Length: 278
Image (cartoon, rainbow, N blue to C red):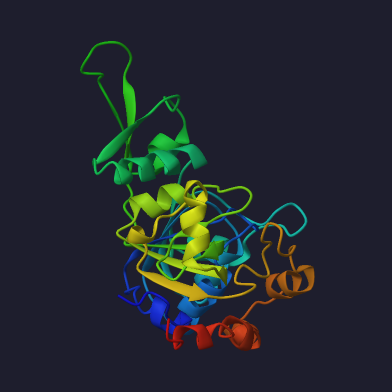
């Protein structure tokens, strides 16, 4: 089956109401080209899962694509301040913010990867998280001892991950910090990979120990150079301060729609790869 497709085709895999998990962490290797295409396609009622998000979640909240967010942290790094669109959506009741610690998101994803309905969480015995998030419950340890907190497993319908290298079968190599990307690729029902570079299969075969996401887990591969911008991508580029600052200053949908148009040429530059005969 041909896996190398256009960005538009890949994002077509995502349905309204899906649970979607994004790779990367805050402003590092977030799949921003894919996020922008989700906004362009006006996906609705998405349930977002991420340990630590920033512009990816904030942009989709601004464009009314989000129903709920399960995350340990949604904000920009110190220089850029809070994620205002996410915050406003939660305050107005349009978005349900399911507050986690980053570790409890990881536990919930581990439960999904293991195909079990919940996971025990060591260390979360008290506090407002237990009161505010319906996905936590404290039960009696059936083997004796102290009560134990359980977190409901979160199984994304689709994981969207940006990598530095990927072959046409979806075998993906991540350089630098891998964050929770490997875990979400195992927890999700479907996986979309956007990649800086499509490499020959011989490279992934000869470097099999470096493959982080095996191709059999991947449903779609999209060639998107600079696909994490304006976030950073290890050994490729740094945060685009000008673009990010401009976005954070935007208040209206109309402004953000123009912002998305400004990225269209860059986001679709790899589409010629989708029609290539391999």
